[in-house]
Length: 94
Image (tube, rainbow, N blue to C red):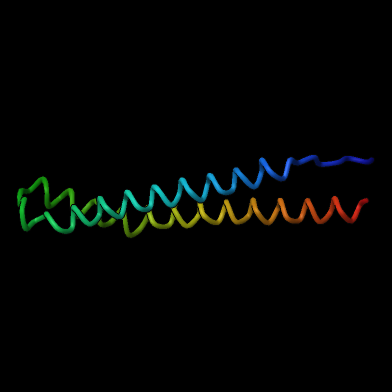
C-alpha cells in the first residue's frame, strides 16, 4: 500500500511561528499580571478576597500555567521537527 503525506512547508512553518508568537504573547501578559498581583497584594490591597486571590493565582501560575506554556512551546517544536522530517523524507523519495 503506497500512502503519501502531502504538506505545504511554507504554511506549516508559518503555523509553527504563529504558535510560538501566541505562546510568547500569552507568557508576557501573564508575567505582567503576575507582577501586578505580586506588587499590589497585600501592599496596596489587603482584604480576605485579595489575599485568597493572590494565593490561588500564585499556586496556579507556579504549578499549572507555566507548565502549559512549556507544553505548547514543545508542541510547536514537535511540529517543526515533523515538518523537517517530512521534507527530508520527501527529498529522499525523489
